Image 1 (cartoon, helix red, strand yellow):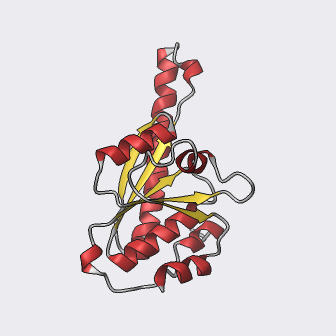
Image 2 (cartoon, rainbow, N blue to C red):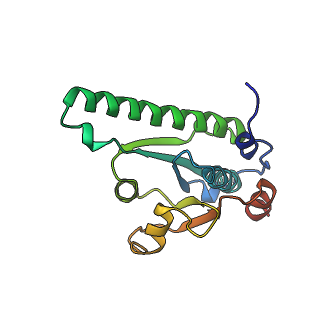
Image 3 (cartoon, rainbow, N blue to C red):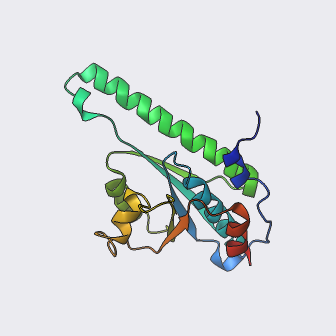
Amino acid sequence: MPATATDSHYQSLPRDPLVGKEANRVFLVVIDDSEEQHAAIRYACNRAQKTGGRLALLYVYNTDRDFQHFAFVGNLIEEEAKRDAEEALKRHAQKIQQAINRVPEMYVREGNRREQLFKLVEEHPEFSILILGAAPGPKPGPLIEAVTGKFAGKLEIPITVVPGDLPSEEIDRLTTS
């Protein structure tokens, strides 16, 4: 399979020895099929590599509630959305494993992305930091706006926002020195 532009975020990650005392860190990344997620994933991979930590990936899908009054159609839509979410996570997990030789934890949830993120963090006190990729331009994305705006302070772990258009080389420089 030929490499794509987004594959470059997974290739040539710097190799550092594991640091045992920080091996319990879990870096959580929300997967949403946006371009900026690749910068967040690379940042998280580098930090996990540097600290000996682990990665966790969350994909939240939302089905169209207009079809829910047709139970059969609603079930098909939900099954397809869940399958798509699982496939997206598996694709990223394979690339991450190839890059840093670690299999990330994977979580699939249905519903509102912010609400599901908050629930997952509450359920998993081992999560150390949330890493999000910001969309270029005046609006970084609804999830970043929520966790840095109206809901700032409600999430009980630190948040790192990585500019989505930050070049891989710059991400590496920031995370491995």
